[in-house]
Image (cartoon, rainbow, N blue to C red; front, side):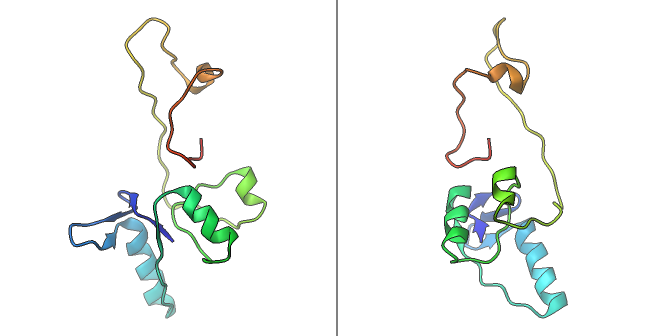
Length: 114
C-alpha cells in the first residue's frame, strides 16, 4: 500500500500515476528479486491500518513504527527520517517544545502517529 499524498515518498503526478521514493525503492527491490507488487493507494495511515487488519494487504510503505503497531506488525529498519516541527503564533506564552503542548489543543491529520 502507498499513501496518495505523502510527497516525496509517494504522490500522484499530473498523469494520475503514483510516483515517489517509495515507488522507486519498491521497483528496485522487485527487479532485483523477481517480485511483482500490486499497489493499492490509500489516503491516510488509518486506511493502511484498516487494510492490514482486514488482510487486504501484506505490506505497507510509509507507516511509522510505534509500540502499539509493533504488537502485530513487523517493521524493517527505516531508510529515511524526518524532523518534527511546531508552528506557533508570535506571543510570549507560545510553547517552545512538544512537552509544553500538554493539556493544550493540537491539530493533526486524523490517524496521524502523534
